Length: 330
Image 1 (spheres, rainbow, N blue to C red):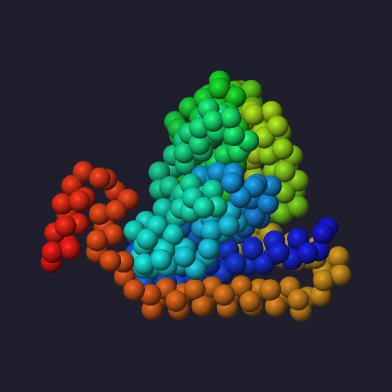
Image 2 (cartoon, one colour):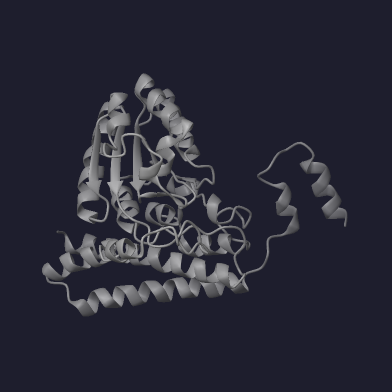
């Protein structure tokens, strides 16, 4: 293990976890409106996949997308401003939790429609093919999306056109409040569908950061070099309910208690300790991440609201000049 890289990735995972905890706390305090879907417990998938990407590669996310955005390089401070609906947010304070986007780092955006982020990634990859660019696109989606039409259409389209796409399934066992196993055919063979369409496909332990990095790096290299799609299935677990107020009473308490002991952050920290990093150092990294996110929350609380005129930007051109002139005259 390269210790320097390992420490940086530990810091990134702790930043994601601290962000998710702070976002939920702000939601319960009434400071964040809309929904907040936490990815706590899934940090290794986001960090591991993004470790294999270039800054100019595209990534399309889903409703549980905070970790993806942070791992891809989005500024957590701007993201917190976005959640609070404040000026300076990644989308000007107008998108909220489920629409985090930052094109400057290739983050095409989170998406509240299950499976629809896949279509964004496929479109971006098709654009890269038409332009002759070496960029690739990655789509992040949950196991519930495997039963949705857009995902099945995407499997066909990327194979038919040989598009440079890596499709990444974060299998956390639950589709919202339903056990995916209860509603999915061939649930014991998660690779059956991508393999049926002729995609190279692999399943890895999504709580093992090194395993995710190794598999993602290998598939990204192939997608980029050959210009053809691949599929990566990551077995993981979300620690919280579907969204912030969901107490997840539908889960078996004993099974839940057992699964959260398989903590991807703790596993990675243990490897760092075995490589000679002190426990004091890893504990300091955790504290620093929490302090950084606490500062982001404080900044978001005191930040100004967006100028009302911004409601007419990034939407449509028809009618916007007239409305803006009315605001200017008011």
